[in-house]
Length: 89
Figure (cartoon, rainbow, N blue to C red):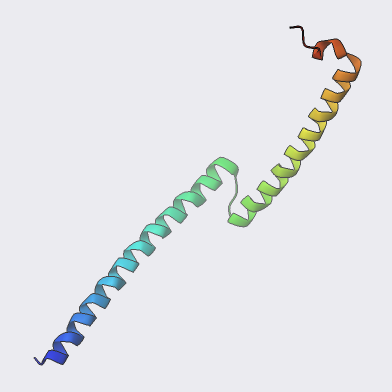
C-alpha cells in the first residue's frame, strides 16, 4: 500500500469513527427526547411540545392575573386596615 493510500485509509477510519460517534449521540438525544415527551404527557398531559408551549402561555397569563389580584387585595387591605401595616417597633 502506498503512502497516499495509507493516508486515505487513515482518513476514512477517522471519518468512520466520527460518524459512529455522531450516531451514538443521535441515539442518546432521541432517548432523551422520548423521556422528556413522556414526562410532558405524564406530568402536564401535553402530547406535543406545541401543547406544552401553549400551556406555558396560559399559565403565565393566569399567574399575571393572580399577581394583579393579590396586589389589588393588598392595596385594599392597606387602605381599610392601615394599622395592620404599621411598624410597631
